[in-house]
Image 1 (cartoon, rainbow, N blue to C red):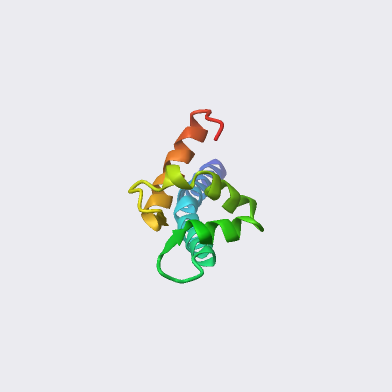
Image 2 (image 1 turned 45 degrees about the horizontal axis):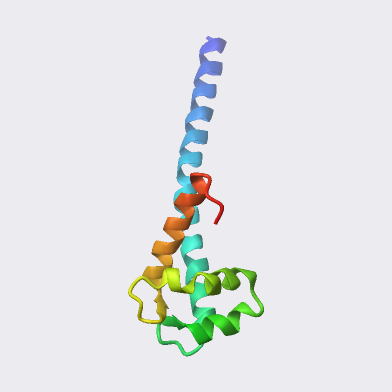
Length: 106
C-alpha cells in the first residue's frame, strides 16, 4: 500500500514538473516582445514608427546592439525605402536566429 502512494506521489510530481516546464517558453515570449518594443521605441526618437539611418546612427554611438543594426541597415531594409520598420526587424531577427542555430557566425 505504501509503495502505491510513493509511486502516485512521484507520478504527480513528474506531471506537475512537466506542465510547469512546458509553460515556461510561453511565459517568456511576452517579455521578449516587450524588450523588442522598448528597444525600437528608444531608437525611434521622432515616434514615426520606423527607424531612419540618422536615428540608428545616433543610437549606435552608445549601444553595441544598435551598432550591429547600423552595420546591417541596408540588408535589413527589405523594401529599400531607407527606413527600418518593426516587420523588417522581426524578419531579420528570425533570419539571424536561424543562422545562429545552424552554426552561422553573424
